[in-house]
Length: 150
Image 1 (cartoon, helix red, strand yellow):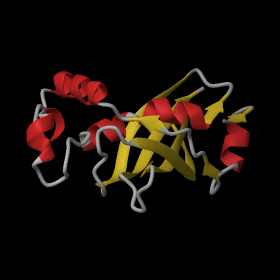
Image 2: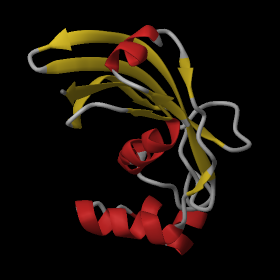
Image 3: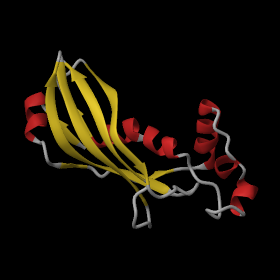
Image 4: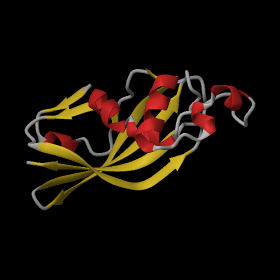
């Protein structure tokens, strides 16, 4: 994990690679809980037997589940000291490129693309790339926007 001793140090890191994280298993229990939380019980995610006969050869994680792992994985990538709080502000770009098979493992790499001043704090634009172990193409690529209040 990369620790920044303040916002000035973080701003100076613009353009640098953050991560990657350790590999995180995406198990059926996590997929089922996400389906329950979002009311998205599509069979390609939760019906194991039917999914085995489907286009992916087994159940896959929801794309938004992969994206929802960002806060936990980002906590492995970096920490900025001296801020009151940080919030997710949104995404400028988001693509789900390759499905994550249930039982697969993902990790996050990030590039700090920009840091801009906003009222009361800073806004960081971070390119997030969710990799799937053993797969050439990423699961998800997003340009995440995060705000820090100081």
